Length: 352
Ligand SMILES: C[S@@+](CC[C@H](N)C(=O)[O-])C[C@H]1O[C@@H](n2cnc3c(N)ncnc32)[C@H](O)[C@@H]1O
Image (cartoon, rainbow, N blue to C red; front, side, top):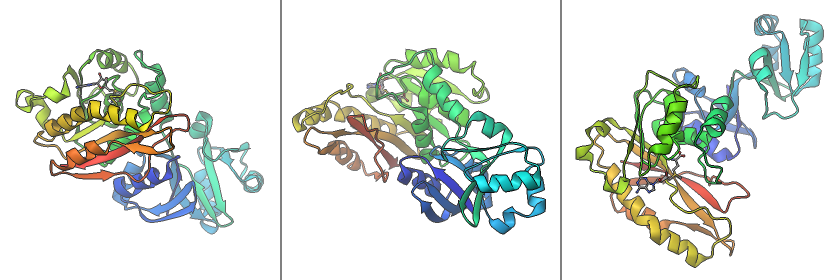
C-alpha cells in the first residue's frame, strides 16, 4: 500500500492519483493523507506527479520493526526524521541512529532531510510510511522565481499548476508532443521539457518566451534531447495546413488567461462585459486547434470571477460554444483558488 500527503486542493490531488497513475482502493486516512494501491508498471510515474507532497510505501509496525528491514533502511543513511519522538528514541537506542529530528509540519521537509535522512511518518499505532519521493520544489522555484522575464502579477502561471495540467493531459505517457498556443513567459514549455516532452510554444508576442528559453538552456533541469520550438502566432488566425510541423502535436496545454488583472470585485455587468470581449478568441482557438490531426486533448484553465455580490461567475457562454463543436468537455472537481485572489481558475479537459 502507498500513501500520499496531498497538496492543498485535495480533490485535484486525488483526481491526479486516479486519472494519471490509476490508483485503486483509495482511502482517505485524514484530510491530507491518502492511502492507495497501484499496479507495478505505474510506480515510476509516481515520481512525476504534480499535486502530491510526498509519497511512498506504508508498512505495518511488525514489518517495519523487523531487524533486517531496519538494517537495510539505515545502511546508507544514519539519520532519521519523523513526527514521532518515541519511535525515534527507540530507534536511537536500538539501532544506533545517531541524530534525529522531529518534523514539526508533516508537509515540509528541507533539502537536508531529502538528501541525508530517512523520513518516517507514523500514521497510527500500527502504520508507518517511509518517504521516498518529495515534490520537485527546486524545479518550480527555479522557473517561477529565476526566469529573467517575469511578471509579479497575481495571475502569473505557477510552474506547479502547469505541471499538473500537463499530467492531466498526457497521463504521463511517453512520446507526447505538447503545444502551448498562449505561451507568454514559457512556463509550460520549460516544465514540459523537464518532463521529457517535445514542445511547441506560440504567442501573439513570442519574445518573452524566447528570451526566457535562452536562460532555460543553461539551467540544469533543461533536457537538451527534446525539441523546444517557439514562434509568433495569433491563434485565432492559425492555419494548420501552413504549419505542418504542428501536425505531430498530441496535447495542447495552456493557461488562457486573456483578461486584465482585476484588483477589485466586479459586478455582474462587468463580468459579462469581460466575457463578451474574449469568448470568441477562445472559441476560434479551440476550433483551430481541434484541426490538429494527431491531437488527443486540450487542457487549460478558465477563469471564475468572485463577484461583489458573493456570486461566482463562470464563462458559460464559452463552454456552450465549444460544446457545439461536438467535443466532450470534462470540468475538474475543484476550483483552484487563492484566498486573496478575485479571479479563480477552473481546469478543463476537452477530448477530441
Ligand atoms: C496569461 S498569458 C498565458 C500564460 C502562459 N501560458 C504561462 O504559462 O505563463 C496570456 C498570453 O496570451 C497571449 N495572447 C493574447 N491573445 C492572443 C492571440 N489571439 N493569439 C495568441 N496569443 C495571444 C498574450 O500575449 C499573453 O502572452
